[in-house]
Length: 461
Image (tube, rainbow, N blue to C red):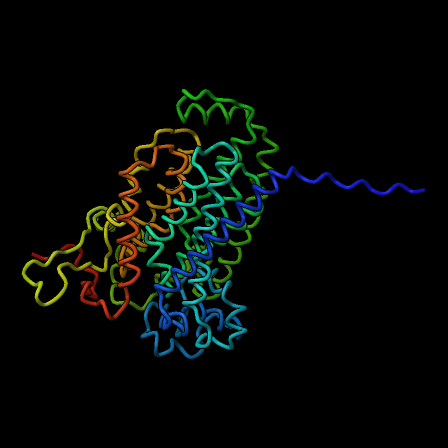
């Protein structure tokens, strides 16, 4: 009589419960986030397409076998941020969000029937969800001492206490890119930790950089995690970060490290090839990074021609906005409007989200902390050199590019979340709720200083 195959032993009940609970809590965070985003966004934003649905327009062009817009920009877009080249109109925003929207645009029957604002609100719930899963993974592997409650609080602070909040409820092309990029970046961090899933980490980073190109500079996270995992070195806790790196490099298992890096690189190489082909066929430029922003038909095109898309020239202005832009008080004009206004260059990052200041004062500084700090600095540096400050915005929206790295630093830095941190968190939620409710809302125009040339940064005398 043939023996029946032995069943694999079931995992311990405690482990099954832990995984199930983590998944349930993660989905609860996503659902709560989506519901609150939807409430703040309002029925008008959720029930019709936005005025700047560029990704849906690009998806529709692909469905018709084209890369350009056959009939030019629709009138409702007011010809805002389209590239003109060779007598044709193109979408110059990196294309991955359009690929995500493509099946939904096809099902809806066209870009005007596809509710892109609703789509982005739904996708936005995945950002805080993935952050929670990342923080729980760090806790499970002993790299973070935060409790599950702490991680829930951090995930919700990310959703409602940062520029992610007003970005999620806006839904137009500039803000949609940030939401999709955050989700892709969250997946990348999750797979890159411990270099656990090299191929999936590469896929996630490919999706991230083809949404927000600067996120390619987050690649050191996987490379340094792969080095750590593949090395037999056990550096001392008192060794400097550079000394720990040297020791790991000297005792690395070369074949294992190369295999992980090769798997990680495959999706990235494919994404480079696709982007290069797209850019070459549209703009006669085979660079994978030349998506066409240099061909935008905008009033400040002259500065791009003179100084380029990126450069030192833009650094001082962008630093001023990130670090020093505050609400403008109007003591003599209270009778004719609100007591303060917000310049659409956006508020300083520390003002809208002061909990980021705790990143500068970690209790625990180790190799992993240095790795995440490096990725945040690299991504932030590219944003600071960009020709645009993020205008128009409530808070500094480019911070979405590296916000997840900053929140991981808050977790692994081990600094207690005392009363000052709690007060800073409450301040962040209050201000970002105000921004989400008022930004780009005609009823609250009086709260914003609108000036179309981008030349006015600080309050005139």
